[in-house]
Length: 533
Image (cartoon, rainbow, N blue to C red):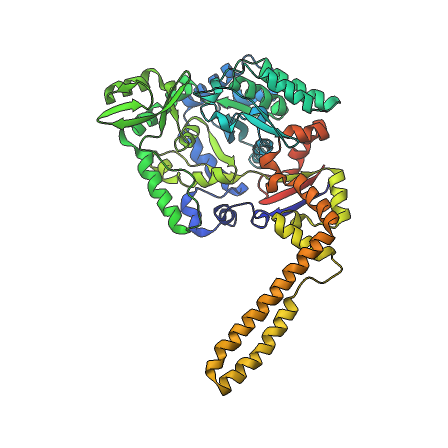
């Protein structure tokens, strides 16, 4: 299978912050622990080993065993869960929302990166065991972000009134969605496998967390992936001291605010991804997940009748820690408290907000994980690769913005030279002589020469644009073939992985899809991957 690479920077789809991180810009060093290189994991293991207690490991393993008790999985998964009790076992973690039928394709890339890194670390450090973890974002409450997926250019949507944490949402009402998706699928074994996956996940499980766990387990159980739902009383009990500190001292607000300001000071182009609240916790009970605020010397859950004094709220933490749900600022801290984690693998936006959190981790005396940008890829079919070769389009050109792509194509295939650079340069040379003459005769004439030069250059630029547009019309069919191919691989002028659902590729490539991804996506290779299946 031909594989090509392009640097993340040259794709044009990744932020300045992420590109600077990948180039290990020294000014960013204060905002992370160690860069993810194989040799750096030794110190990370030692630091995590010192801070992860045996008691927390037992709680983690017992909770996972309970969550898996009704799931048919593999010996590899069960052995990984049991191994978490041992102090030489570590994790590599990725997280994702509970998007309907996994959502965008990069769901697979996140998990593949996580599995592959875990395997690579086990090879490099044979005395350690490393477990790949998928952290389900069961406590998120933005249903509109997860209630659809795209298939062959159509949006398959779950229309439902929803409130509270999405993991607890009842799957009732998904049968019409299944019927719609089933009609969109074609014939054959691959399509039938997708129908069966969707049906078993969503029509045979009671809530969205159980459905997503089943689906991810079916896709990755052979590779030992452990799936965690951290919305658990036992796990929240381990986090209770940090919940109390957040409520009383508002540590994360102060620390993240300082770190964010320092990050912005490094480069004004670095976009601040998240802004801390004074209290970065929600009150989370059935069908309700509302922010906790401190107003008029009273703690309240917004839009509810719940209110507490400080003493009452601390007692509630001790009694019902599961009622307290961290937001995007505090969730990473929760993750690192309950997992023996070495590295978090995420997309560019995720890593950007992790850079804002280093100060908060230090203040809470929790080891900051390594941060790794997940693999990214565009996948071409054999037929698409043939079309690309016939059209003589380079892989690099596919990443161009649409207008630039078209303009370059026209210039490449036109029998007329549509580049007036030489003529413009010749004109500038001729005007140098006029400037010299003006200086010698009448200096007031210099402005008139400059105005005439600008007018004539603008005229040539205008003529070049007119000629380009004329050739676009003349070469309309050839340009259409090229843009059709680009749109297949970059739908809506976006990365394939951010739009397309895995089912669209699975229907075409079948069971070889995930093994090929595992074979070709190398997590420590800092390049965008171009795959032909």
